[in-house]
Image (cartoon, rainbow, N blue to C red):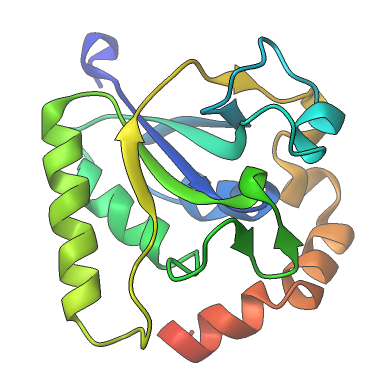
Length: 177
């Protein structure tokens, strides 16, 4: 792996606890961090973002080696872990901080995201339109340490949340196992 060629993907998919594990399991992903982006408050706290007043979305930053995994492949994982048909909501969580978005870093990512979104919309998987935003990346603020790798640190609570929020049921119904 050439450390100079590491690229960054930035996605918002609702509760960031639920977004980290699927990307951590991929070959070519160097690291992930959950945090906040897309808002107007500098260095927000979890409580501030949860209030809905910061404009930020809960998000995941993925550092990856494009020689091992492509941005397009990361997008495929992203789409399979969200409900892209809801605005300002993901499962049990509602508010703009739980919106879905692809925050692109360059024109290539933008084009890939737009193409991927269009393909998903034409695939007939969802009965409603795909409303996930594709917007320029802004500053990413890493969340507090207790949120990082939450699926490992608090695996029982993570599993209960995945099930109780309706995310797990939706993903299984939509995509199978």
